[in-house]
Image (cartoon, rainbow over all chains, first blue to last red; front, side):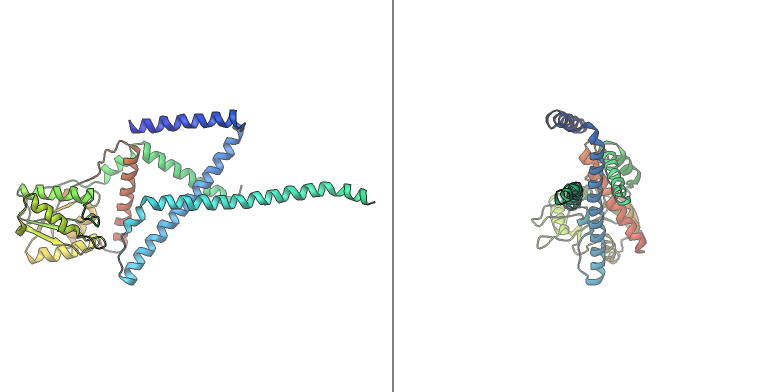
Amino acid sequence: MTQAIVLILTGVTSAAALWIGTQGLRLRPGDLAPAVGKMLECLGLMLVFFMANAALGLVAIIGGRSLTGAFVSTYAMSDVALLGISFIQGLLFYCWRETKARRRNRGLRASRSDRRAEPAGIQEGG
Amino acid sequence: MTRRTRLLQWIGLAGIGLFLLAAFSPLPNAMFRWSAAASDIQPADAIVVLGAAVETDGTLSCESLARTVRAVTLFRMGHAPILVFSGTSRDDGPSEAHVRAELGARLGVPPEAIRTEPTALTTREEAVRIGGILRAENVRRILLVTDSQHMRRARALFSSGGFQVFPATADARSGAGTSPEARLRLLRDLLGEWLALGYYRAAGYL
């Protein structure tokens, strides 16, 4: 029953988002495929952070036990908070990379428009 | 599209696939059934209850409570004359072993039949320290109480300590989880135990 509720609920909100996107925000359905690609990339980054955190944590716990004798349970690595924080790290890193890409694209556009404006400037000068 | 971007996309896709499979398919339940140890209740010299967790205010975790109730039931059915409770404390709180011993006494177990081991931090330490207590009392056959996933690792450790081990499983989590959350938790616990089993094998403990 819970499973059906979760699936129906998310199905309804997804359909509503699709309708709002295409009708209200004038988003193109053709842009959905590249958006899925970006979503997968962002999710991949989140999972990389999670795997790195878990691996580093296990090595630190086991290494710390043998080197210092201090005990920390490895079950700490299965805490759901680690997954949540890893996802925030991944999302932030992804947005950071996107900001750089956007700035570079803006720079390229600006230099292209400068080049287009140049011949006119020469004519004016001559 | 760079190779790095494509790799991240594949990782993301695998993550979604694994999530959907774990949350919305019976795969975790099947994995649970496949790797669960079965109980084999036999008359023994002692019942050994392995530690799970206790909060600083003395509240036992569901796993700890399930194991304690199972052990007390076995004791009251007359399967063994000694009951050993294990479990350390968290921060400055009471030890799990002592909280369980109090609960056992309230449920009708005579205090003279109860032993406690409140210092062992890992399953391996439990096998070593409880093994010492039991050998001093000439115990050879034990009923080992822990959850059905942990049993394989725990049983191997106690067997290598020279005991004849009869598993008595006590699960706080059902292997027939019907909600997505229950199945995700089940998978997380399974992966954790498999990782621990791999570590114990790699370290030469098993």
